[in-house]
Image (spheres, rainbow, N blue to C red):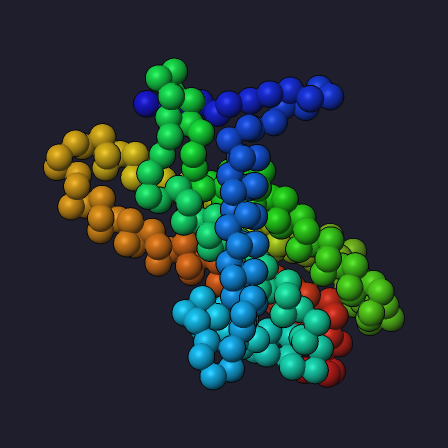
Amino acid sequence: MEHKVPEFEWLGIHFDASALMMIGITTIIVLILAIAGASRASVTNPSKIQNFMEWTIEFVEGIIGSTIGSKHGKGFIALGLTLIMYIFIGNMLGLPFSIVTEDHVSWWKSPTADIAVTGALTVIVIVLSHYLGITRNTKHYFAHYFEYKGAMLILHLIEVVSKPLTLAFRLYGNIYAGEIMISVIIGAGWFGIAPLFVWQGFSVFVGAIQAFVFTMLTMVYISQTLIHEEEH
């Protein structure tokens, strides 16, 4: 049975209360991990959380180095780290359990299973990448659009808009479909226990891949507007 979302209205706009709650929970978890990894940092005796955070930073540095390059990419490590941690943790929240009331209202889910959340993340990426292109690479940013004429310019503009939009739909589609499958398997009762564990393990893998893909493509889009082609 399809679950409903708890909504409330403010200034004529309808908001999903469960999505807002899960966004806040994801933010708090990421903040706690960041603080725990940075506090009491030790060179000789690092904690497990410190080792995890250092590995994550090195992983993000690798993504940035392969897309933007070490020369231009140092300032984007914090952005990449925030994206990959926030999206991965958000992807994982809907896996262990769900909270559904008797009137079939869903209160606990992955925030990334909501197209409004993934769409908002994508808007941030689009605005940021073009802002950086305009402010840091002004001449080549605008000159790039004059390379196209007539119908080719229209097609190019459609491509510029559609490529980042795939970020939102890819992330949303994978996480939402995963939670639907979990609901279907749970509906099988005792017969679904073994498949549930298998599917949740696969969902962790998918969630990690989607966090990686979103972060990597964000850096690719930034590099396309920030770095002139002759510099590659």
